[in-house]
Structure formats: structure tokens, C-alpha cells
Image (tube, rainbow, N blue to C red; front, side, top):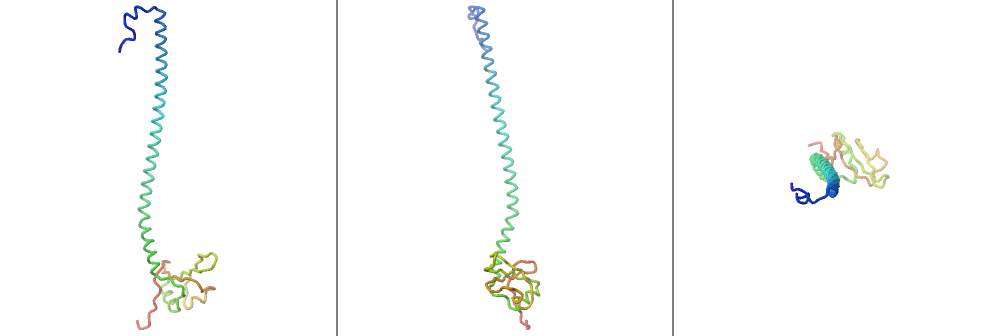
Length: 167
């Protein structure tokens, strides 16, 4: 470290000037200490902000992992629903009620009928019905209804096929 004053300058100073110089240096040291305290406070704030950002990033990564796991669970369910939707279209829900023979065949398989009524409030009103014979005799509505056969588990199935006695 270099001296603040050379030997020659020290010899030329009078003691009162030397005291003023020392007091001035003390003032500089106090200013430096205040600046250092400000810099430390800024550093501490920056570290706190960094730590908070890292915590948010960790939480976001955890949420992303949770969502990926949920997606892995939901993707097969969505595929199954798509396949079921295709199957629903293939079942051929009909606007005409089943015949007595179709109803008897379906009832023997423990199936149900899902009947969607049009023009009834609420507009999406449906009934589940199981019965032999003329299924329309038990219902106060028939016209405009859509009939969808359901299997014993409640899933849509193919329209019942009536077998003749010889088969």
C-alpha cells in the first residue's frame, strides 16, 4: 500500500494541517463504510430475490411433473373415451322404439334402454328403462325420442338382434 503522504510532505505539514488531513481521512473512511453497508444491503436483496426465484422455479417444476403424471393418467382415458365415442356412433341409436322381440332379447341380456326425449324440459332429459314386451306402453312419450341400447354395465351396445327359433 502506498503512503498517503510522502516523507517530504509530512515534514512540511504543520500539526494543525495534519489533524485536518486525518479528520478528512476519517470522513472518507466513514463514507466508504456507508457505501459498503449499502452495497451489502443490495447484495443481500439480490440474494433474497434469487432465492425466491429459485423457489418459484422449483415449485413450477414440481407442478409440471404433477401435470405430466396427470396427463399420463388422462391420456389413456381420453383414448378410451374416443374409442367409446366411435362405438357409440356405431351402435346406431334410433328414433324408432325397439320391437317387442328386440326388447325381450335385450332384457334377457339384462340390458337397458336410454331414451332421450326431444321437446321436453330440460331438453337433455333422458330415462333409463328395462322391460319386456311393448316398452312404449309404459312410457308417456314416444314420438321424437331417441332410443339407445345399453348393456348390463350401462355402456352403449349394439342394437339387439332377434334370433329366429331355428337359429
